Length: 326
Image (cartoon, rainbow, N blue to C red; front, side):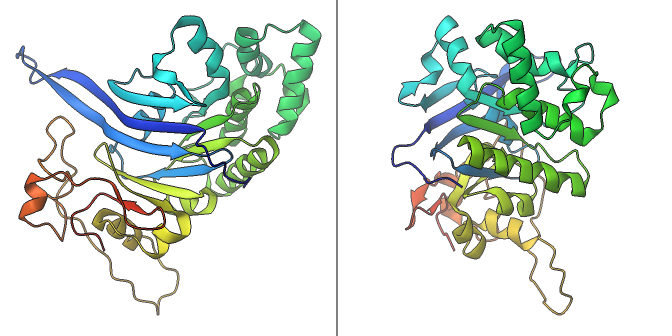
């Protein structure tokens, strides 16, 4: 990884994304599904922030809200000292070249009617409008960077495997040399052997291009391998964030402790206590009062039911939102 800059490249402050919904099919009363509810973090230049949590916790919604693929309900996204959430029209369009995304599904994210050359060149056509020769040269160079055979430039997505399609998605994302990349579970739909190849490719590209990643995944082993820092989300809230080594060695939030206890250990002789969380994930349309985790927490007390814990620095940049951290 490249050295971290002192001034954050990206600063997210109290980000919210609420979706309006009806209480029932026959009701006029509106409720809000609080998919992301007050998330704050920073991202340094060349850094990888891993975001982990169970399905439905708001990881992908958070990533798309940062990029304004979904318009945030509230909060700020400060990119390079500029309020990204306040940009409009041409300013927003011009700034998009610096913030790109790799989607989870390599099948649905590619237009089946376009050749991969046109798919990779589409961001160039929107942002730079290069001459035909220069455009093609840039596409071929990007394909080589992403590990794709340049002879396949005129082929269509259905002619490629899942791993190759994801490389096409990566090539499309890096063709404009972005500064920040949101990786929305980019390897979850791939075979394990292909996962390793794609992760290594992303790490090599980061070293070469100096990009910063927000890497979203539910796989704790993948997060541990690629991340510099790790953020843990639960029901739209950030409950813990710390350096990778610190959070895996000394988790503070009970939810993080439970997640790490579920990692299988290959050594049969090494017995590991597993913490089983009781109950289902509460609905983001009607989250619990106080600490959102208290309904499933093995350490919950009366204060947890009434007071929302703040995300506080417990030392060495290890932040935790819990009244009774480990």
